[in-house]
Length: 87
Image 1 (cartoon, helix red, strand yellow):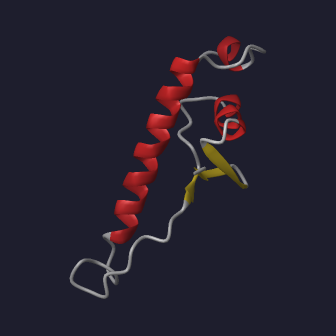
Image 2 (cartoon, one colour; image 1 turned 90 degrees about the vertical axis):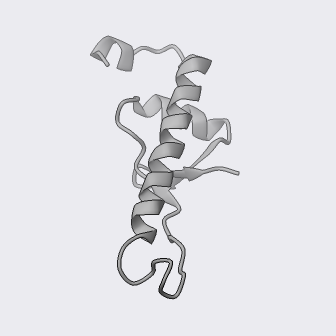
Image 3 (cartoon, rainbow, N blue to C red; image 1 turned 135 degrees about the vertical axis):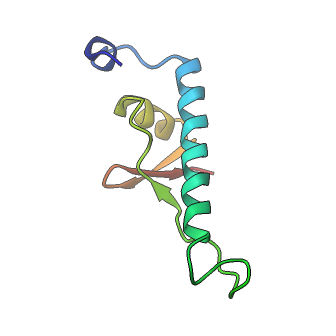
C-alpha cells in the first residue's frame, strides 16, 4: 500500500475490514496448526492443542484497520501489537 493510503484520515471501508479480518483468521489458523504439529504434542502424543491465542496481524493492512476491527469488537488488542479474535 502507498503512504497516501496508510496516512489517510478516513476510516477503512467495510470491504477492506472484511478482507483484513479474513486474512487475520487465516494467519491465526495457520499459526495454530503449525504450533500443534510440532514435536511433543501431535495427534499421536498427548493430544495437546495449540496454546496460541493471539498473533501479530498481517502487515498488508495498516494499523488503523486492526484498531477499527478491535473497536468493533471483532478483534481484541492483546498488547504489544498482537491481536486475538474478540468473541
